[in-house]
Image (tube, rainbow over all chains, first blue to last red):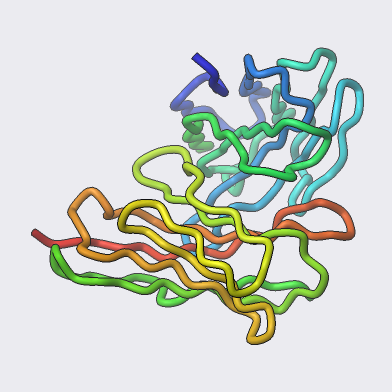
Length: 114
Length: 111
């Protein structure tokens, strides 16, 4: 089944403890992106990648890192999480090097940083 | 600054009613406008609109784009409880192929 898989679905951690949220897609999509969703603010883009080894900042990249070493995986790294990074995170992918068409979203990761 | 505004922010109606959700924008030169439905988890794609005045339809849902007046509407007729969701609108920019998202409209359908 074509899908975007994020793990974990829920994560509670403490300030400063490094964490990684994984994202994998099996559709051979070039474009992948990370979003955070907060009440009243909609989806805000953190980082995106147009292809392997090509990543760029979105609207809210501070405090996050990403890497794209292979086409299917696009992990999101929080080196030193802080409470203001408590949010719902979505990974998404799209064929082509940009989101020309509909995005395919993962099921989300709800992160709580205490 | 490029902006997408959805209205209303939330809406409660009874099953069987017809609803119209609005997506207004202050954006020039966009490639397409997209509508998504978000229930408890990931947004799912509904429509992509690129040309003004051409209605897209899928069952009880339809959408149209007005590039002159800078808005799009999403219509849902004969609403059902399964239509309860947050409806998101996004614009794909022509200059950098980035998406600008609205904050969404939360729709609640009461039985």
